[in-house]
Length: 423
Image (cartoon, rainbow, N blue to C red):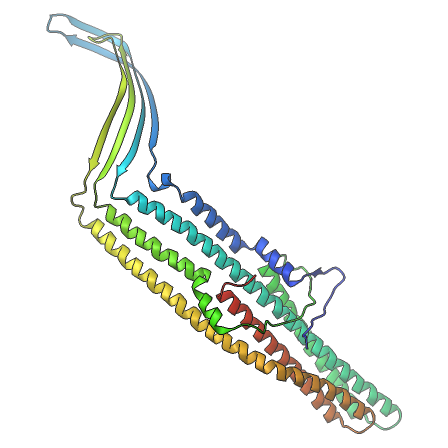
């Protein structure tokens, strides 16, 4: 038996599961942030960021000055002048490239690549989490609306019982006490229905939040909870290693290992080639040199060798090694927790499926019992208590069937999320 929810408004938003998932993937703020992180890490994954590309710079300065000049030359000539105008112009074009720094550039470039891959896996993880959350919330709405339908069916039975009693009273075969009790039962069920409709409305609001839609939107959902009956434990356990969170943890291990190489490279010499083209022009209205202009290229190689810095580099490497070990432990923790989560969810999945078949039969029988009891009550072959017990059995059977079906579906969704197979 399929559990169906039917609740439509004239101006409501009709939403299928596929439409809900597509809307969430389009609107989710969390996914947008994860996409932006991928884009940022892609931009950072560049040899220039890693320090492996040449650096070229230009500079230009012009200085005007007024000075007082007083000079005595060894030839006996004396120069005295106030407010002598002078000019100094300098221009340079410099270029430098790193030749060697203990392969730190190589390690940094690889680390930037790992960060890009890791952010892609985190995006995949966020997509899987969003799909799972939307599907679970969507089917929760279906579940709550199914409760509404069960209560409505029970209310119809109570109204039918009240109608029968009113006919009997008109014929002098029933008293006011029975009618009052029947009316109380109808009112109580209507109040319970209102409470359940409020619960369904709250579930819809939560779904709208996940879809990043206006929470005042009226949702109309008509769907059934159908469970995939073909899930097997071993294939799911094998796919844990391709879970996006596990793969992101793998990238974190490699990132920390590359940080070890980067910090180790700090203890090696740094060799850099620098070239420049310089232009200098000095002009003065007084003095021994009235004009001096030089221009030309130059090149040099610099070698910087760290000798001692208070063991900072060594300690940084030791900390990086500890972080790398922690990254491996964190990955093992994720695998452990996900493995246990799969086993527990699979147990819930199997148990729910086993109970579901029995509960479907109970629900079918309880509905038949309710109909039969009402017929017998109409023929004065059953009492009010018999009808109320049949109603209670029907409501309980409906609640249990809906809950078990939802539990099986929720377990299926979680198993597919953990195995990275949600579509």
